[in-house]
Length: 434
Image (cartoon, rainbow, N blue to C red; front, top):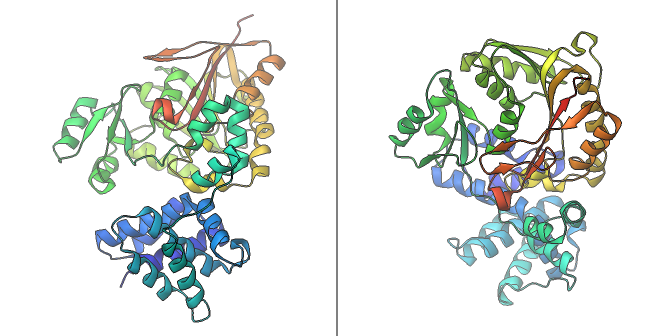
């Protein structure tokens, strides 16, 4: 029998000890269990919730325990996090249930310890202390590592940093890119609406529908290749490329394939689209996806984007360089990303610059080069582009305008609290003819 709290505890331990991804862990657990919908919903709520609020929960443990959270055994620490999360952030779980279920999860040695801390927290009216320093307070209260807040501050200033750092988790809503090779936007909208789902066209991105429909309802449309999941900001990045029929285009960091598919559809499945990635096993997803969508102009290739391919020199009308990044633009949907080691993040700009610099060699004279990331970090975004343009005077920034989205010197940053999309950066450049 599926126990959602026990499943949550096991997933939290796996997430922390094995650095697993939360979305993959959820899919694995759900696919293996025959459980009631309410139990699956509780499991998902608690698992993602504890990850989202981990810093705050550990701060509370530090305040109420003689043993600091960092020294508490992993299973016991996650039981405490789980109990505290239920006490603080759920309104349908009684206090006695949150405590007793947490104690039941603990082994004999730690039952009294868990019980004492949770009941002590309740007796004080569930109060906890926060630092006096404004940014430390924001960090703990919103469970955003201070190092990330400092990245936001240095990139965009204090006002934007505060807005990003205090943003609540985004309500799950799916963005669908309509496959206009098979169906019109209005036909797909009306078909999904007939299922009793709320759905509407994007206000900023062409051929995107936004819906709160469950994936189980949408699965048949996905399987038939009538659409695929793509965020609005990602769709706009592929729109900025400006792909048209009978062109030769490259997507140099293509997986999982959303932008490749989007550009192929924009090309009306006419021309040639070269889709490469470092990992060959991921390229099979693009091949399978293309077949499902009815696209046959995509050529896949295993390729390190930093390494020059001689036969690609000045071959392409347009090149999309959507580089691997820190993913800070999607931490509001995928909270585990914000706990990445800061050293890993700081190492990325050099890799990204090498990919951009190499990819520029593939662009024809007069051709277009687009650089994009799903992160909010000036070092990975604006600073990389500035460095590139300074070192490559044969390229120039090209402004673009898509509805209300207007670039500044060829670049545009999507902020979740402003655009209601993923955090995203896109830059358009042209190789000069002379």
